[in-house]
Length: 242
Ligand SMILES: *C/C=C(C)/C=C/C=C(C)/C=C/C1=C(C)CCCC1(C)C
Image (cartoon, rainbow, N blue to C red):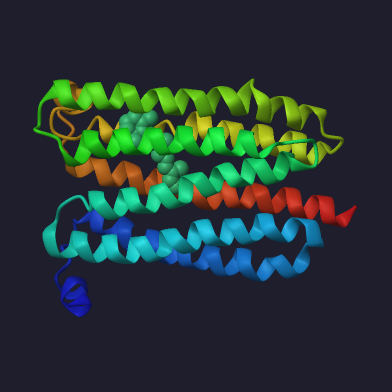
C-alpha cells in the first residue's frame, strides 16, 4: 500500500509532499526532545517530555494522514482533528508547567483545555459536516474562534501572562512571550486553511480551492509543534545552565 503511494505520487502533488516531510520532521523532533531530557534539570524533564509527546503524537497521525491523502487525495479531516484534540491540550499543559513555579493552578489548566477543546469541536463540526455552504462554515468558524480568542487573551494579558511576568526567571518571561506570539501568529494560520474549504470565505472570495486547506494546516503544524517545542527546550536549557 505504502509503496504504491510513493511510486504513484505525482511530482506536483505538493500537498502529499508536505505530508511526507511533516511526518519525518515530527518524528525527528520527537526523538530529539525525548533524548534531550537528559540534558536538563529534573524539574524541566516533564516539559521536554510533553514536547516529545506533542511531536510524537503528530508523527503517528502524519503517517496516517500521508497514506490517507495518498489513497484518496482528500483531506484527512478525522485524523487531523484527533491529532489536534490530543496535541493542543498538551500545549496548554506546557503553559501550565512553565508558569507553575509562579503559581499556576489546575483551574487555569482546565480553562485552557476546555477552551481549546471547544475551539476544535466547533472546527470539526464546521469541516466534517460541511454542506459546502458559507452559512455553515461561518457559523462554526465564529463559534470556534471564541475558544481561540479566550486562549489568546489568557496567554497575552490574562493569567498566563501575569504569572510569567511575576516569575523570577527571565527565560520564562521571554519564553512565554515568544509562545504567545506563536498563538497569535502561528495559530492564526489555521483559520486561513479553514476558510479555503468549499463555502469558506477565502475559497469564495479568492478562489483558493479546498486542496489548500491541508497545505496551510501542514505548514502551521510544523511551525507550531516543532517551533513551540524548541522554545520550551530553549527555556529549559537556559534555566538548567544557571
Ligand atoms: C498542533 C496543532 C495546533 C496548534 C492546532 C491549532 C488549531 C487552531 C488554532 C484552529 C483554529 C480554528 C479556528 C480559530 C476557526 C476555524 C476552525 C479552526 C479549528 C481551524
